[in-house]
Length: 65
Image (tube, rainbow, N blue to C red; front, side, top):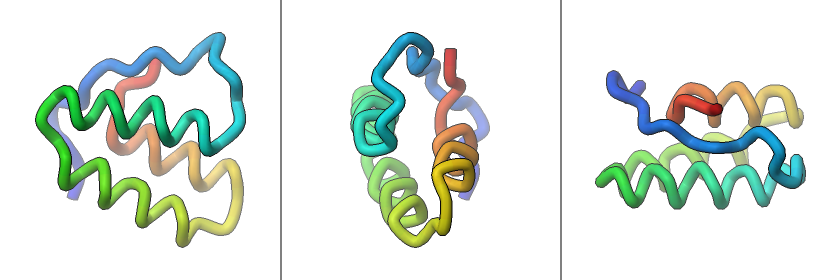
């Protein structure tokens, strides 16, 4: 599922460690009322094969700034 109105998420200037970015994006989703989507995003990222793929998944769920 892709969120139509993705919540804005401040990722630029943050620690680029993927687990840090997952936490920031997940918290943004939860605060916007997308608890299930936050879990879905994390599950997809854990199955991803690379950092770039994980970043693309995050971008599917939040509007990164």
